[in-house]
Amino acid sequence: MNDLATNIIREFPELSGARVAVAASGGLDSSVLIQLCSELGLSASILHVNFKLRGAESDADAQFLADWANRLGWPIQVREMDAANYATRHKCSIQMAARQLRYDWFSEWIASGKVDYVLTAHHLDDQLETLLINLGRGAGLKGLSGIPARNGHIRRPLLSWRKKDILAYAEKQNLHWREDSSNASQAYLRNKLRHQVLPQLHEILPELGLHLADSLAYLKQADLLVQREVDRFRESGTSKDQDGMHIALQKLKATRAAEAYLYELIKSYGFHIPDAVQLLDAQPGKRIFAGDWELIRGRDRLSLRHKVEVRALGQLIDKTAQEVSLAGKRISINEVKTQDPLQYVKSRQRDDRIFLDADLIQWPLELRTWQIGDRMQPFGMKGTKLVSDLLTDLKVSLIDKEKALVLTCENKILWLVGLRASKNFVITSKTKHILELNLEK
Image (cartoon, rainbow, N blue to C red; front, side, top):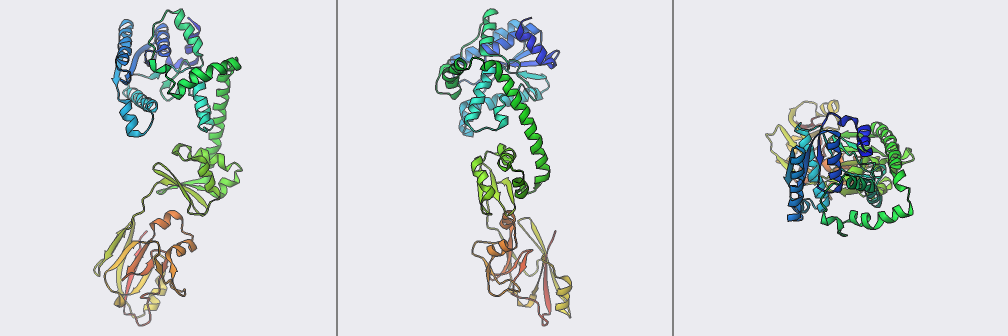
């Protein structure tokens, strides 16, 4: 048994006796992987995606693999996919589209229970290309750790082998394979690295191939340590509720590595990390966006949540209403007759409850979201004040500010719901009928 085959058995013992599918393009790398699986006597099949990007050449690749599978007595599954259309719809490159479609199909195939593992033919030169690409994109430890040899049910048995070693094996075995004409194109970043950069790197650093795998392994171990530490911080320094995830700023800054922790916590959401770092010392209310997500600087925390489109909402309340609901808040309405109105109010006064002189009210009332420029006359305060300033004074978080409601009568604000009552229609000793409104929990 040759060194490549021996390496597969040693590094991936779980493949012995397993049902595997080789993800094959018909090119050199996947053809070598097919040959090795055959040599090892694995229970194997072939998965091939025809993206129809090279016309007759693409169809010839599929036929080449079908003929080979027939000679081996292996099953083969060929699926045609439109990567160009997917790329247009999802605003990504054709290469990214092809990768996504391909791996989605692999996941479906594994979920079907027909195979235990899907094998791909990535090798050490692919690792180096990926490392350089991720380095240019400002990747963290995980991105610099390269392509994993194991990822769920995906296995990459050739990952520690140089391209030249794979080629040498193919030539020794007199293998035939298909050459993808697009691999020679300089339009793609990987091809530029492959043809222009990597040969010079290997010439300047001849031992790079010997040490790259070890370096990537060290980076993977370092990433495990980082993730363990981040998980500890996630338990003590973050919280979650219906609005999203909240990061405690005081605890984050106390780590002395706030930028690194922040990067690890939000890296999967697509934010421009330098912009996110600036939020650490920004004024409350500052926010940044990434796709459907937003990161908001609050008074004492950063809040990560799905982007919210703030819309003006309102609902009229007539005299017969016993309850009203808006924006997830429910308010019960009750008219009370009492001989001692002031004592009644004193015994039941709470921030989430308001008492109005029912005989002074002009119906209907309106419950609505507050708006920029809204002013009210807070009870116990001289003059009027902007609702926005009141919310700030009350240290209401930015997220809760967006949900704040006001109760109005003829455009006068009677209640900043659950927070402050106004001077309008307050209860006096002469009040005969009390309109009591309760913000229900």
